[in-house]
Image (cartoon, rainbow, N blue to C red; front, side):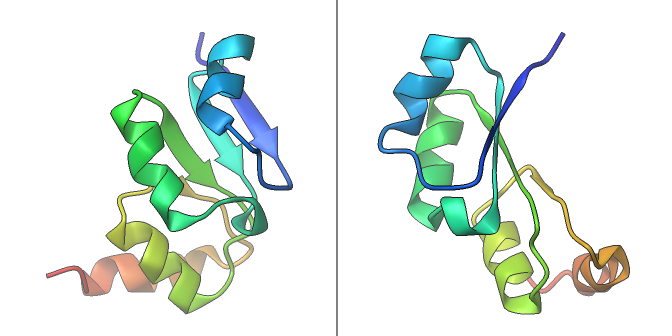
Length: 88
């Protein structure tokens, strides 16, 4: 079974924490993640799914850096952005 760790504030060393608790996925709130962490987490084989991502800019920024999933109060807004395929 896949396990995930939720975070509502930034963690000082999220990779060590995720390893320590045996989590497979990191689920930070939008206020608990910086974009540089996503690449580091991916390099250590963790998936990243960010929650409460409601602004178009944040959605686009997270998609560009390769986040694995986005949880939002506005799924239609996210679908529209994904359908535009702005990453090209």
